[in-house]
Length: 105
Image (tube, helix red, strand yellow):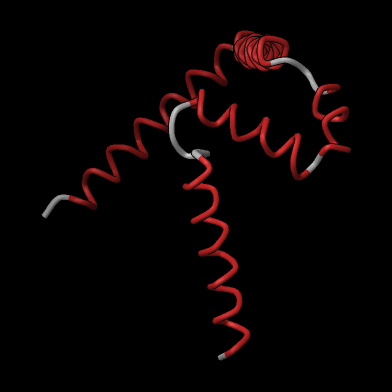
């Protein structure tokens, strides 16, 4: 029981501190809280945080990866033989009709 109380206290304390520091409020307050953590708690890690990608670089990377995935997916679908695609559509229609039949009261 003591171990569970300790875990609960640590978790509750972490939530309390982050709320008090403004981590869960506006993005401006979150940025200020991050700056306070950088200067007070983790001064040695500031250089590593700054080495990471900027928000715009991260956004551009995510967008380009997403677009690449979409292009590859639709390229693969467009390369499928026509009969295979129509057969898959028929299987889907059949599955949906059977599901509708089963779920009818």
